[in-house]
Amino acid sequence: MRRTPAFRTRAGMADGPPRDCWAAGRRLAYTDPSGALVSSGITALSPPLPLASPGSYASGHLVSGSACSFPVAMATGSLGVGETLGALNAALGPGGPVWFKETRARHLRTRDFLAPRSALQARFGEGQVPECVVRAIAGLQGPGVAPVLRCELTPAGLALQLRRPAVFEHVLGAVAAYVTPAAPTLPGPRVVLHCAALRNAPCALRLSQLRAVLVADYLARVLRARGISVRLVPAVRDPDMQTFLQQLRVDWPSASESASRTASTEALRNRAFAELPFIQNVGALPPGVLGSVCLKELVEERGREAGYDPNLNNCLVTEDLLSVLAELQEAVQHWPMDSSPGLAGTPDAGTDSYMIVHVVSCEEEVQQQKLDLLWWKLDDQVLLTQKHLVCGPVKITGAAGNLTASEYYKLRYAQVCKASALKHGGDLAQDPAWPEIFGVLSVATIKFEMLSTVPQSQLLLALAESSVSTKGTKSGTFVMYNCARLATLFEGYKRSMEQGLYPTFPPVSSLDFSLLHDEGEWLLLFNSVLPFPDLLSQTAALASTAPGLHITARTEMLCKFLVQLSMDFSSYYNRVHILGEPRPHLFGQMFARLQLLQAVREVLHTSLAMLGLPPLSYI
Image 1 (cartoon, rainbow, N blue to C red):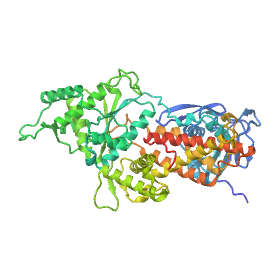
Image 2: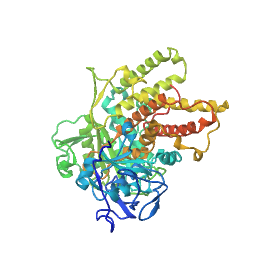
Image 3: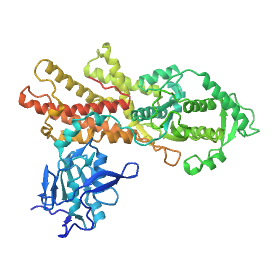
Image 4: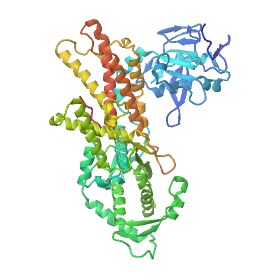
């Protein structure tokens, strides 16, 4: 006996649609990620549709109803998860967002999006979803909206399934549009990323400071990928730190002391003596200390609610502190002319178009707030925005002592070498290519460990050798291993093609994507390729206009995305034989699968580039 759906549709009246039904052809509006109400450019089509099954509406090439006939909803341009969700929520009428995208394989067997029962009951009362709403959703069309196969009321809620072959064709026919970060449409500030930890030597760099360095490097990459102009401060002068950053594949500028910075420091020193009300009778001052200034009044003026420590009082003004301020001022005032204007608009934009992001460890937070306030104290006319991204502490589990950043890198490198020697034999070190691979695997392990937790939270670090195993599904090594498997797959196709076993790859427009019917194939496209542009936008978001001193970053999103992508690909690769027998009737499915995996490979490579990791061709 068929289970009765938890919702009923309210039939349209004979003399017209119900009053709460949106009319056919009405333009929908929805809230974009910034919270602004915008027109979606999407038309809600609401003529009656024939039922595909009880409680279900389906779209087709031409649907005839009792009132009129209309073409199926066809997507235009690149498809987007955000655009589709926006259209679905708008189709339900006024109210907050209800729909969400499914991600689990067991749910994706029957639906792609769901409006839960409880949310619909709150929206419509007694679960009576208007019939015309269901019809409108089944016929949605517009820029970025994925084509709908059917929409039906189920015990779980309103379930929607896409026309998957059409989505495959749309996405895999224009892969570049889904792996290239989209430039923001709204103007914003140029960004100066300041990481105070880089003024230390590697042997003195704490793990929490290493975390701040890796977060700053990640932010620089994702912001630049979106066309935002970024400068990095400080320029590293310590040769040992420069070498260490190269080992970590951190792209940070290095420079010697410049004459202009020396002059800027001297100017700040003179201004400090002329304008700062130094506290008197503080006793003998140590070398390099110019005096002490009270910040209490400025803390009150800036507002404690902004996030400044209310206990901040006196600040020792030192030559080193003024040198730091001089370098920050120089970064803002002497922006390279050949630098992309990014979000700042014109190259001669004022200082109000700049945002300084201080990326610091929790131990450095108070000192960084003093630097922030001292800058305001020395120049109360400064119009730039200062934000602080404070990284939480790093705790080593199962160990009494602490490691420096340099010791941590050496430990991971030794573990990678040992694991590789056990798997492949002890003569690997004789191959000149392997030390480079060992270095990449070590850095991948470190970056995934440091960035897979929300930066503001405490990080628990396990130093066991299992962290560098390719069999573990949570490590950077596992991601790099699957990257190499993809490279091996395409190299295998290339060799077979050169041997005459397979034909050359046909034009993408000629591929038959209806042959992709394995659930693992849809999982890869729907969870990895299609939502990738939205992910890149979210990971690069900095709330420059948000109130308060502190700012957050979402480094963990990309790491978790890569781990899940690698798990989905590994499961599919182990189960499905991609390069089949060289028989003409099998080539169609093989080429469709290769095109899908090429898109997965592009997503993987773009993501690794955001982490400063090169793709490996073999491990």
